[in-house]
Length: 487
Ligand code: BG6
Image (cartoon, rainbow, N blue to C red; front, side, top):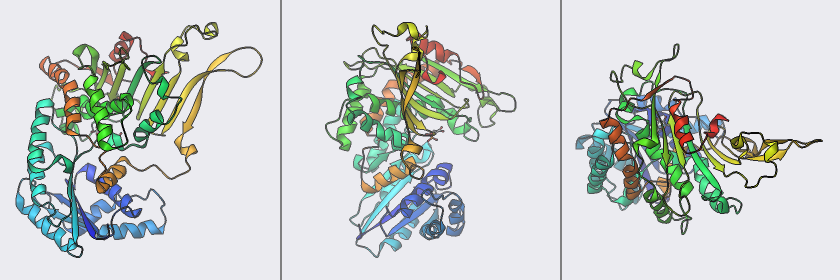
């Protein structure tokens, strides 16, 4: 550690992700003393900019999660002094060589030099940039790791092409495929919840669970990102990666150990047991204007008449002994009424329920439901039936409630990128996607994506700020399910 330097370079440094997430996360790690003493940060992008201008650009986005006292301001200054900028194109070696020379001048004082490249760049320059980054890999006995952000292709074939291309430049060992949902506190906790509590694991199967819902909802549209989004749509943007990853962690068998390979072996296994999603198991939607709020098609960067879905609900099934017949419903949408992400587990009705007559006709309102709220206001709660205290016998649904902000008296939780970047520095791959995992994920969604596009399926329109298309309710109802977020 003290004999190695670390150079971290963000390619696409003037992009949104770099400004909003990557540099603030790097600062947080630096501030907490989690990076080696000889660490340097580099921004690389096409725009010409001086180090000073770059520092000014990222300086405005650095926040102090832990405390906002003087010390933090000082740390920001020190952090910025370690930030440098190199302009260059992604597909030409010259810029990379210049970058490498600058890195080397800082690295020279220590015997070992490690380098991390974060590829936060458009897909069309991905392979060239990876090749150039590999060419300036650390030559001084250290390691070089490359972080790649989605989109990992648009379907199984293009993803395979990308994977083959990457593997010509880098070994699997060096590649860190990020899915930032895996870095969220409650997602990391999912396996802890399951495998370290004897009250949950025995219930985790078709015997007791009626359905599982993974819900992602945003209260803003694609404003400003329409050009990117239109090429992908909500299924590729959120469902095939973030929500499917959550599902895999939720449903996998217990891994042999907490080792990265053991965990990912189980994820691949459960992904491969899932049924390929068919067109009958999906509902797609697109938001339209409401009052002053613009519709998707009002975005100038979106092609006229685009059929790209900004909402989708999908029913998935796992063909194994544990989950046979249990519907897993995934729902994601932009421009909806609220921003939240959660997992809802609805348990079976109590057989021969003694209190049936006290519970009214809506059985669903009384099923036990475990809710894992990923964001905002992280929480885990279990809905149970309880006697309303007092004379007489009246039942209602109450909560066993774990709210993170009151249970854990600590400052805000670390951002997902903080956790994941630290993992890269430490070489921990548990929360990164392995090549075969990615392939399994694409194979579940590729036929559906192709069929939606080939058949030009028109998305159901829903007003900006609503709860999404009605079709999502019909899809759930087809499997006897009611979305838990409506209760
Ligand atoms: C990204 C998607 O991966 O995740 C965005 O490309 C989405 O469309 C974002 O808004 C949501 O992330 P978070 O952490 O804000 O929920």
